[in-house]
Structure formats: structure tokens, C-alpha cells
Amino acid sequence: MNNAERTRRQLMIRFIQEFFSGDLGENIDRIPVEMRPRTEEPVRCCVYKDRAMLKYRLMALMGFGMEEETDESRRLSDYLADAKAGNNHTEPVLSVCSVGCHGCVDSHVQVSNSCVGCFARPCVGACPKQAISVVNQRSTIDRTKCINCGKCMAVCPYHAIIRNPLPCEDACPVGAIGKGEDGRVRIDFDRCIYCGKCFRSCPFSAIMERSQLAGILQAMVDGKEVIAMVAPSITDQFPGTIEQLFAALKLAGFSDIMEVALGAEMTTAHEAEEFFERMERGDILMTSSCCPAWVEAAKRHIPDIVRFVSSTPSPMAYAGQITAKAHPNAVKVFIGPCIAKRREAQADPNVDFVMTFEELGALLAAKEIDVISLEAPPLEHPAASYARNFAKSCGVSQAILQEIGEEKPDDTRPKIDEKFINGLDRKSVNLLKLYAKGKLPGNFVEVMACTGGCVGGPCSLAR
Image (cartoon, rainbow, N blue to C red; front, side, top):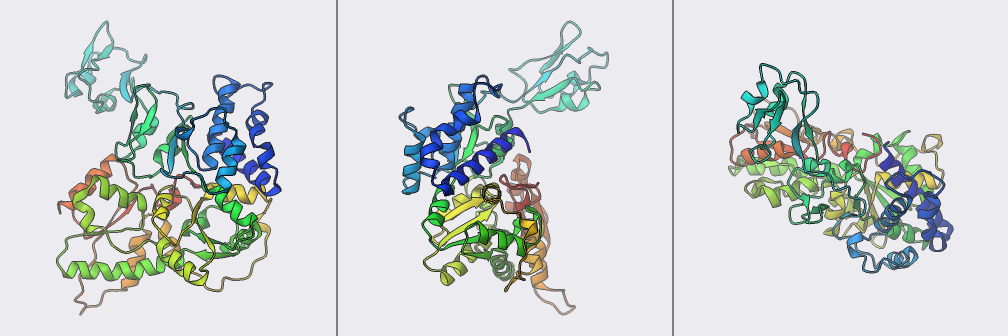
């Protein structure tokens, strides 16, 4: 756990504890001061900036972004009152806190002091744009010619040429992040796919997600029926068995638990059927559709592949349908590691809120619930193992292969030739453009935006 994660989780725990105790409205404005007293060494340039960042992080916990602040003197307790009343704004799901943005230099290749001006000068020969020359026995890069291809880095025997990164921009697979006129980062939400890679990569914790935690906690405090819809990737996040974890969720305040892997069983069956239908009508390809960041990437950046994306709903969507039928008046909360699920849930009438694994971990810590110590009965309707494996890279493909069953000699059905994209980046986005044009082998492509699958999501506790 790095310092940004530690601070974020400490703040969540305190927020939850005081929310349940009823003291948050009275104390919330003091939290930044108490967490960063003047007697301690500041983490940023000064204690006041530390406190400002805690203030904006608390606003984000209540669903507000710094972009909406029109009155800097407005108290956090006022924002809390709005959040409890449901008057907070959770769209878009990401927010940039310009106070915290370091204004990092643009990503570029540069020559370090390790350069010895060697006789071979492989960097000069490797540069496709003739951007490198040797001046005073040291390689020099002409910025007006350099395209940051990195070929000089690869051939330097002294590793003297390095890349100076802009972490959030480098992490974004679709070029949705750039700088404004003030040198601070901006997100282009017309291009953003909500994968959360920028959120995870920012070393200054300046990119924040707009949480729905206040709405969930308020529903619990009001005594409403609150159902937890738990993503398959949860088994890799907490110690103990899934039965113990479900018992912990009930102690934490949830009325009942829906295993979203049961929805994954439905996704598997429908996606397998859809694959055969598509192949029989002459489609060259079908891609998976359970990753919302991938679906957004297809719509916004690879229009040629949209017609090949499966129309089968995601496991969350199916689980929401089941839960809504069984508990029509309940507050339905999806729990997972994904920021893009917040975006997907906004268009799903069967999901009221999304809680991340980080927030769930903070809830269990705030209530001092030790999962591994709990006694729990077996689940009444456990999901199949292949459905729980949905959260891992290749899990969707393996589930569909299991659903199809072993091929028989007289089997006339189309054969599945599965491929997978294990994490979206700029290279894999280009590969998917080639798939759309039929230039790469395979007729079923599983796409996961996060490396390793959902278990590697931006809001995971263990990765």
C-alpha cells in the first residue's frame, strides 16, 4: 500500500465511523486539520495544501468534484447535507483536483548524466528522425524532431537515455488525458472510457472518483433494505471463505447478498448462444461485452468493431434483474473493483449504487469486522466455479468453452477460436482495430481493460 492509498483508506474509515455514530456533520470540517496538524511534517509543500487535498477528497467521498466548487468558504458539513439528501453529482465518475496536480512535465525521452559519448554512438544511428547528435561528447536530443519512439533507449549500452513520464497520460489507453493552459491535467470525457488507469497511476492522488458511499450509508442508517450484489473478483480481495465474507457483509449492514457470479452463469449461456448465431450468419468475429470500459472504448475509439461486440448483458446487469425481482423495493448496491461500473450502473435501472472494494474494506475496518474469524453456513445457491472465474483474464473464454462442452466428431457447429486482450493499452487498441478489419486470426476475442482481468481493477485491495 502506498501513501496515497493509505491516506484514502484512512479517510474512508473515519468518514464511515463518524457517519454511523451520527457525529460526522459536526466533525467533518475538523477532519483535515486533525489528520494534518501543524506539528507534523507536511507531505506536500505545506500543511495547508495537505489539508486542502483532504478537503477535496472528502468532497469526492460525498460525490462532489472540485470542478463544482463555486464558493471556497462553503463548509464540508453543507456538502454532507446535500449528499444525504441525494443532491450530489456523480457524473462524470472521475474528477481532477487541480490543487493536487503536480503539473508534471510532458512525457519525453531525455539523455541523463550517465551518457559517456561512446564511440559507437548507437543512439544516433537508431533514431528514425535524425533527432540525436553528439555535442561536447554527449548525446543531445532535438525536441522539435523527436517523436519519443524510444529506439535510442533500447540501444544505449549505458542505459543513459531514459523516458521522463507523465504517469496519468502514459497510462491512458485512448488519449483522453492532456494538459490545460495552466499546465494542469484535464480529462476529455468525450474520449474517456472510465477504465481508472489514470486514477491508479497518479502519484499525487489528484485524480479522484466520485463516490456514492454517502447514499449507501444513509440507506443503512434509515433502516432500508440494502442488498449487496458482489462481483466474482471479491474472493481474491479478502481473507477467509466466500461464506465468511457474506456473513461479514450482513454484519456490516447489508440485508442480503446476491452473488453476481450467478449473473455470470447467465452471461455465459447467452454469449455462447449468440456466438453460434453470429458465426452461422457469417460474422467473422465476436468480442465479449462484460467489461464496461472495453465497451466504451469500442464505441468511442474503434467504431469498426462495435458491430462485433456481443449484445449479451453483463453479469451485473443479469444479477440486477434477479435482485430487482426478488427485492423490488430494496436499495441495490453493486460491489466490485471497477470505476467503469459506476458509469454502467448509471444506465441500469436495477442498480442504485456502486461500492468499490476499497470502500467495502473501509466499511469492514470501520465496524471492526474480522472476516476470517466468523462462522458461516454454506451458501444456499452457490455459483459455479467457472462463473466465479469470470473475473480473471481468459475466464470468460473458459466459461464459454465449458458451456459449449467437448466437441464431438459429428459436431457441425462453428468452431470457436478464442483470443484475448489482457489489459487495454495503446498497442492493444491498435490490435483490436486490426481484428475489426479481419486481419488477425480468431473468431472470439475476450477483452479486459485491466491487466489480469477484473481482479486487477483500479479499486482492488489486492493485486
